[in-house]
Amino acid sequence: MNRARSDTLVLHLPDALATEALARRLAPGLAPGFVLYLSGDLGAGKTTFTRALLRSLGFGGRVKSPSFSLLESYDLSRFRLYHFDFYRFDSEQDWLDAGFEEFIGAPNVAIVEWPERAGGTLPTPDLHLFLRFAGDTGSEARIVEAVAGTDRGRACLKALAPTDERC
Ligand SMILES: Nc1ncnc2c1ncn2[C@@H]1O[C@H](COP(=O)(O)OP(=O)(O)OP(=O)(O)O)[C@@H](O)[C@H]1O
Ligand SMILES: [Mg+2]
Image 1 (tube, protein in one colour):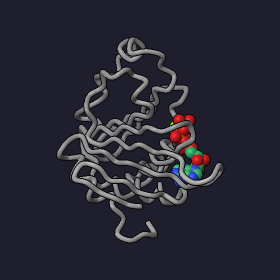
Image 2 (cartoon, rainbow, N blue to C red):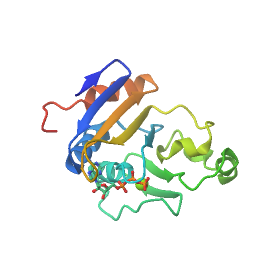
Image 3 (tube, rainbow, N blue to C red):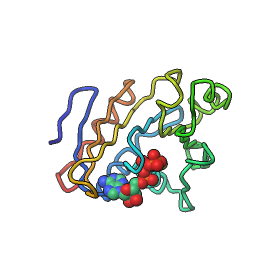
Image 4 (tube, rainbow, N blue to C red):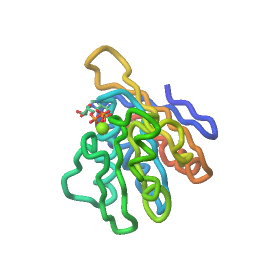
């Protein structure tokens, strides 16, 4: 099931623990300026992934979904991380009006759920994860396709590949 090209990695995630393990493998690759997009249907696991990433980066507090607030921010030791959720955007104009552009890019790290709702004017991400449901209804299984948009993202793909199938 797992397959890789130089800019794409596809992994099977049998349960939420596997999604969290994937986030832990990405965490060391984050650096100021890193941009990560998370796509996938409602409940696919975007916030679950982000929560595990923040834990791995040393954040011990509550990680709320930004579904309603649009934005949550975290002061971490190496950078400030902005976690966005653009589900409630209706158009590109909503994204332009929100004035979030300045938060995406150095010196911050940005994670964006539902980037497609911003209408295509977002910057190219270092990494874009596409999560989708796999298996029967109610199954915890997910498939994730990780697509690198930059050299930095390509370097991360190597770290995302599990070292054994239990990851
Ligand atoms: N393999 C899996 N990966 C991630 N989450 C999983 C998995 N299996 C089950 N879950 C559960 O599915 C739910 C995912 O919810 P989460 O809030 O992360 O989704 P989301 O993609 O952020 O949705 P939304 O678009 O509404 O923000 C959580 O309750 C999580 O425990
Ligand atoms: Mg979410």
